[in-house]
Image 1 (cartoon, rainbow, N blue to C red):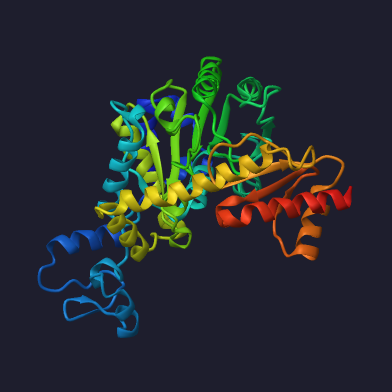
Image 2 (cartoon, rainbow, N blue to C red):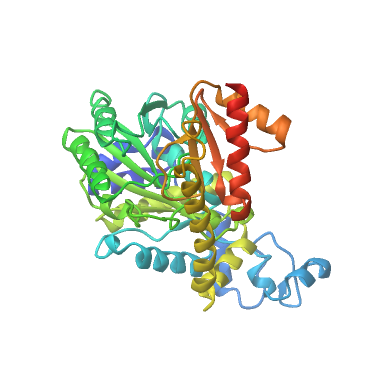
Length: 430
């Protein structure tokens, strides 16, 4: 094992042996080189005042070399904020701005000890880092039975972890805290579990209320007190799109410093929050009362980034930073939020109006981009195909009964026709 990795492991083990036990084999072996090209280049950037012949970019006229045909389309930005490599952990100013945003939007974080967000190539990359650092073959990934299918690829196929599902909703059609607790406690023999909490939920658009959130936290605490090391990951892809009386904060704040056996990890990003899907700017943030643990986890995360993508795209990080710093940012974001909320409310009004009878039953939703219909008497896949082939309408079939509808990409005036047509297709197949 590399001495740097060994040193990081010793630091984590001395500060919190439970966190050390959570690391995968790869996680224990990972480190960020301190004497490689990047570190030498960073030293040269600070001290080489005459010539800096270290890093693999080309310069011209004291700035990064670039093509006019590209710069002409990006003339609002200085070449140094576009063409140079971003640091592996991300543009420092952006990391600081995102941390300030997290604190402002999550008052629960006040007084909690958590690290500086590390920039990722959007959320999937952040989840992949979690998988690399913490998931070994056979480890349990605890998720609800209504989940984003990429979890299976990220944790199961790539890392050999075992997917453990529990029903998302209980009999009262609220979040199933008891199911989560049962799934976690079932891992006592392994002594470890990775739980992914995705709210607003994809595919259902559901976010728990305050009481349900407390039940989630209690379930994770109970697992920890039973001797289970829990990596508690909040997948906050759709954070902020809370349209009703759900919790309006990430559970990361409640999970930070919850128990020595709980490591809270927040994965979020500008992707959906700021409507910049193609920019691929996300973040991963760790919580721990130990600054040394936070520093060691950052080094290991940077090692994963260096070994996979080297660093994230600089231009899109610059674009997001400028947006966050703009005095018009909050107003423009509120405008888009209100559009999304009106669409969600319109969907609910239509489904609750009685015009579809029992044809279009749905799972509770209150947030995010999506909602899920619960079909009966017909196959969701048959409905999906009929909508596509006969009516030119695209939806997502999930299992035998569930049909996911993304109201986020349908103009409000088109929603009634959309659901009228879905109801028509269901009746035709019935």
